Amino acid sequence: MSDCILVLNCGSSSIKFALFEADAVPPRQALWKGKVEGIGGGNPTLTETGGVGRGIGLDAVQPYHAALAQIRERVRARLGGARLAAVAHRVVHGGAKYFAPARIDAPTLADLRSYVPLAPLHQPFALDAIGTLLQSRPDLPQIACFDTAFHHTLPEVEQLLPLSFDAWQRGLRRYGFHGLSYEYLSIALAERHGQRARGRTICAHLGSGASLCAMRDLRSVATTMGFSALDGLMMGTRCGSLDPGALLYLMQVEKLGIDEVADLLYHRSGLLGISGVASDPQLLLPREAGDERVRLALALYVRRIVREIGALAAVLGGLDLLVFTAGIGEHNAVLRERICRELGWLGIELDTDANKHGAATISDPGSRVVVAVEPTNEEWIAAKHAAAYLGLG
Image 1 (tube, rainbow, N blue to C red):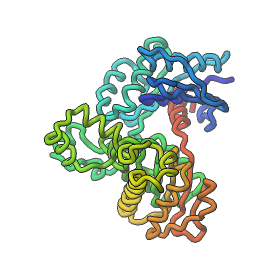
Image 2 (tube, helix red, strand yellow):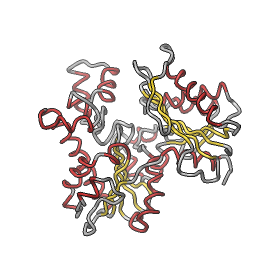
Image 3 (cartoon, rainbow, N blue to C red):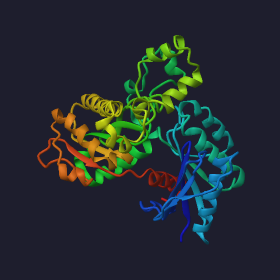
Image 4 (cartoon, one colour):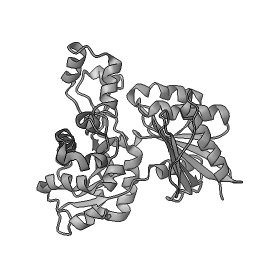
């Protein structure tokens, strides 16, 4: 095996990992990948390529560090005699300063910690992993790849928040997220759909977190997530766009504290909050016929996506290509059908059979808008950036 690049994608209760050959442009298929889930819970599991999840024991005091240690052991075993050339990290927020992949040292790490309040579900955990590796392997290059970077092309009017102008000067602006996913799509869609992808494209990254990105010439021109990863679409447990007056009411009248409001918005809203059952549409769909709250949750989820696609289509002046990606976007045919049915006014005509089977193109040949399903590959983008940073190109 040649030199390798390890990619880490750290969340609050899970760590995804993937190992790529350290070529100038790494192969898109990882040599090996997996994830640790349920960190901090009662039943953490480790899943590797081609296997099923198996229970693992993690230290109760520092379960996250224990999970990282297990991953490092598995990586060492997998490498054999090969050299680990670098570790690439998905870092959600680069603020107004970081738009290109950056090698992390102690001062840069300290700088990135200032963005933790803007992405509390992801930022602290990625930085914790970086800090742990910096201590144990200071010689090993660690490259941060920022989810906000792809949206650096947003026009200023899309970045501005309608607050006093000094807020903009202090860095309060719309940044956009899921950038590694959208960057991958900008490459894959050009390969699969050619010139059409360079026209008016909307990509729907629908997972536990969710957003839309409007692209023109494969560059981000508008997106639904803004200052934080709470904005835009309704999500699994996050609220999405919300009347700020509702927050004032919760704090002034119902006397909720800052921490209580944050917990509500990040962890107890969205599909879970309304349904009271689950945050995953796959678990909700079988129950909607007999549970009105579940039905309402799914209806609002679809409505918010439809509303925002309509808004982005207006910004683009029409639509040529609509793309579904990420866990829900790639695998939930029922929700894709409901979304596309509500967007019939745009000229979308769905091929029911193609949609059911998750084909690469799920629109009817006569549809004015091509509708596609494209698996994302954030890990490969991170590996590619690390390879370029190391001068392998």
